[in-house]
Image 1 (cartoon, rainbow over the protein chains, first blue to last red):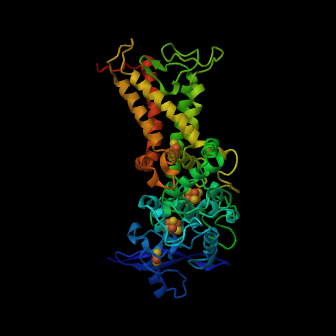
Image 2 (image 1 turned 135 degrees about the horizontal axis):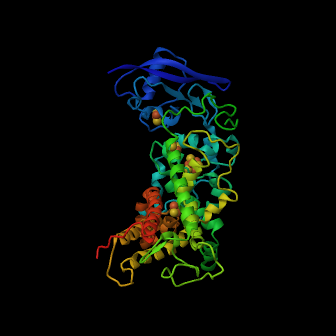
Image 3 (image 1 turned 60 degrees about the horizontal axis):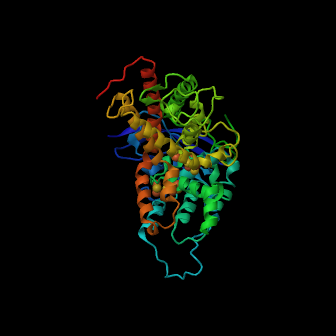
Length: 249
Length: 264
Ligand code: SF4
Ligand code: SF4
Ligand code: FES
Ligand code: FES
């Protein structure tokens, strides 16, 4: 069953832009990205949109549909009423390049700033031994497809451009948590997480978790455990005392 | 509402509307505010009331442990605070459950969203010009949550003891039970579920370890807490409401408005 949908698509570039109205045909089973493609094919051949897999796995088609950060290829049209106007904008925490395409290099900068996995210096490659239970916990975080929807949604930077230098964002704080939980990582990432990557700015309001298309429990399983680890290192006098007495790190 | 540093910052795609969300994103924060305000009003009135908090053998959770000399006889023998304390004895212990809940990771989410609007809902702009999260005083104090968790455990033990004392009759003979016993038992159970599903608890029992394989017992404890933890929000709400209901029940019985049905 086909119908005509009322789309409001953001068109413009860094100089400015606005929502433009379009009427586009929708067929059964289609997703927002299909409709954007039809719009491109039939009415707006110069519409810029980034996409790749159409299967929710490449993380390219991130945008905001009716104001909510989502993957366009994973947003089914049947979740909207037939006559309802549907707004589609680029991610609004990053600079726009053109139409639905944003410059996400903020995320690459942050990714590079996180120190890489650092095994103990006396361990040669090939000597790594790990138990399954020890690596299991952080495996959830590796489902990340780097769509940056969490980064886009997090109000710390979405609502405060000035926080960008000080805050790595949920995706990369999760990366730090992953490494801190890694059985063979020898770096102390706790102070770093707080002092250099801005973990203290996160107020655990869980929007990253809410939008993650991989359903990673970012806040509960990465950010809060990492905050607790930071407390161990920076704010808990008893743990500090215990580590001095028992000479443990 | 415009801050020029948020979604309207230079270079980002400008949109005239404050948010393009079309769902009822304001509903959840509105409900949260309503329930919190109701609870705060109720508990403030009851904490200052200094009456109708003991109907033998039941004591209201707001007034336990009762530590002042002016406590109603029967509510506790340990009078750590002398007769100079003339106010309601509830005020002496209230700081612990309040601090526990105020620093709770779930309640933090709830009040940051619904009271501080930071953010009111995901991708809805917050109204503040600047934001530093929990990096400074006073919010940095939230990092002390685990100490309130420890205090909460002590309170849970006391409230569980109170519930067990509910298996007496008004004269202190054991082997009896009434509706109030069930109310108190449920209260203690919910408080345990709330505390054991706590994120700090999860960290303390095992979450802080790098090698679960070297600590099988703590790994099991962590696994257990990890199963409760996803329901922490539900436990937080249900236990909050139930504490108030328990107090209301005791107040009704103590004031003679309602007669506690005795089972045996
Ligand atoms: S939970 Fe923290 S990191 Fe995630 S969106 Fe909220 S403030 Fe940002
Ligand atoms: S954590 Fe989730 S939302 Fe964030 S980049 Fe990875 S997949 Fe996307
Ligand atoms: S196109 Fe790959 S995630 Fe949508
Ligand atoms: S009680 Fe909620 S996180 Fe500890």
